[in-house]
View (spheres, rainbow, N blue to C red):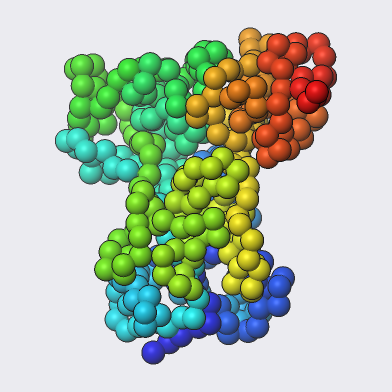
Length: 408
């Protein structure tokens, strides 16, 4: 039976950054094995819907570590390697190809898979999803020479894909279930800005709409009977955590792998991280599962330190960034339950920030093309639970620090 002291199941960003952290902390040759269902060594995911999809980034440039890195440090990588089950008591993984793989400590980092359309014609060749490097390659290839595309979904992946396709000269229609784009996150004013920005660049919207069927000619038929001609369909309707390998393990699973504030599962010596981990957020006092780049990076690094003996709660302000057309923006925190939303700057321009407050405490912030002090202070205020004045915060003529509430 093959075995390794440390094993990571999943070859995504958690694996790449955990490996890098372990090496920096003195990992010995032969102590780490990465068992990946992917066909490529660990790579960055953000470029898949941005620079790589647009053709600006190469496959080599999006890798987290080079192939030589793994060879030089004696890290075994098995690609296209499927795990069928985990036995926590025996500390053994069962491989789909046959045989077992033993471990002392394990990181479950299996990530998530795209939700699939459940309509007639969903299996047609021109219907694509974006999750892996191979997916991005396929969309990039199919987009060449395409005149019309439909992007289904109104979240950040759909918005990024729509922007890239539009910049390639493709006529893009976004089919959005809600009455405005990214309603779960954007304020109404933000949705108005982004919809206007996209429309000015040729993107059309079909809002409050759902897909009823897809036809072989490329036509997307909406539930209300409207038809949209298309040569390419990209669906970005969310993802589901990959947890099937734990079905018989006894490890607790609930919307991902349930872990505590140390990213530990209910089984000794087994951690989970990245998109698959449903962890206890000590900053916000709630459970959450995060499907963004920064979380995977931070949790991968954390797991590397944990395997080498460090033990402290995972404490991190949720963060993500996006690039669409010529815009770049950043977001920190969790707007759920916010009682006030403050818009700072000019929402008719591409320079504004948005701040979510609960009981006068900052819980989330969005910053786009604003002074550096705003992007620098946002995560610090969220972590420290800084009280701020909504009225002073809304006054863009004054520095953002003027909004601080000083305890009396």
